[in-house]
Each structure stands twice: as C-alpha cells, then as structure tokens.
Picture 1 (cartoon, rainbow, N blue to C red):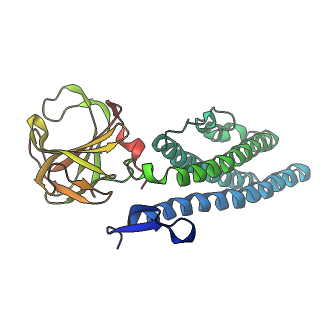
Picture 2: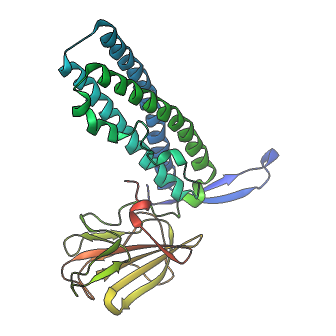
Length: 299
C-alpha cells in the first residue's frame, strides 16, 4: 500500500477533464507523520509553558517564605534543565527541517548563552546562597519561556511550508539509508586503512553483510557499478541539485535510469573497495558540494 503509486484526478467544473497527478502511497502517510510531530511539539510546548509558569510561582513562594531547603530548590532547577533539553531537541529537529525546505535558519536556534544550559553548571556555586539560586532560576525560566514562545511561532511556519512544498520534500534525503551502528562521522578523521588524517566525505554505518540499503529520497539511479576505492556504488539524483551516494555494497538491487522512491531497496551492505569491514558509506551532495548527511536525517 505505502509503496504503490496512485493516480489522483482533478476535475474542472461540470466534470470536464482536468489534471492527473501520480502520488506514491507513502507520501500522505509521511507528511501526516511530520505534521503530527510538529503538532505534538506545539502541544508539548504549550503544556510546558504552563508548567514553567507554575515553576516560577513555586520559586517565588520559596523566595517569599525564605525557604532554606536546598534540595527542593535543586529539584526545581533540574526540572527546568530537563525542559530546556527537550526544547533544544525540538529546535534541532526544526533546524534540520529548515535545511531540507531551504528555509533560512532562525538565529534563536543557536544558544547564545543567555539563560542557556551553561547556567546550570554553576548551580553548585549558586548554592552558597539560596537567594542567589532563586534569582538565577527566575532568569532561566524567563529565558526558556521566551524561547518556547518563539519556537511555537516557527513550528507553525514549518507546518505551512511543508504543505506548500510537499512534492519537492519527497526528493530531499531524510531517513537513515540502512539499519546499523553509526560508526564514523562526516569531516576530518584518521583513515582506518591508511592511518592518516583525511577528510571523510560522508558517514559510515556499520551493519552485517546483506543488510538492505534504502533510497533516502525519491529520485533516479544515475550510477550503479564499481568505482575505484568506493567498491560497488549506487548514486541517486533527486533533482534540485541533490545527489546521494551509497558505497561498499555487496550487491546492487536497481538498474541505471530506474526511478526509486524513498524507502526502496537499492542494494545491500558489503565491504567492497577500500574497506576494513562490512559497512555503508553514505554521502549527500547539494549543488555540487558535500553536505553533512546527519543534517538530512530526521528519524
């Protein structure tokens, strides 16, 4: 059902012939899932906003009553820290969506330090004075509340943009290409074969030989063969200047020129080419330049 292609007919007035659109079955489900995640985030932020207001009231009451129970104050502080980490996770998710939708990243997504997580590392120092800790917690609560309000606004912007770009979004890499252990990041590292420091063009995912490799987005197969140190390679052109490369395969499951959808099996994990163990080397290219694949993985 999810990987079947359906045809949607749009009729004009009085039943006159109109447009015919091909739609893959997984697209509505995937978009519904994204909208559900964003909607859930909005609900979470709303509930946590009320929770923060309650926390602020608790801190104020503690201040007024001259509470000297530092354990209770620390408990409030760590509850705030937990909320802040959740907000950071939501903002990280939003940042990835903005990259995929070619939207400008909001400056508030980067932690400026004002009311940031760094303040919690100074709690032991602040504990020398209950009143100092209370003031610090008030400051953190105000900062987090502001970030939450901004995040709610930007979540709504993202939901609107996803609806507008739902067709092009299917061509943006957004899933892990195989199941396994994320074993090597993008960027400079010590090459396991040569032992020298070199730039790693993608990420490595260690998995047993024969593990299925999936297309991370809709596209067309533009290369499916051996290629130097990459071993057996498949490349997928997704349009809009985006290309993904899957290397060190044991076997190819597609043919040159074939059109694939996100989630289709395109090959199997192996250790061909210059490789020390079975794994998938995965690259993302945008406008002819290398990009960090982790920035394009939502799940």
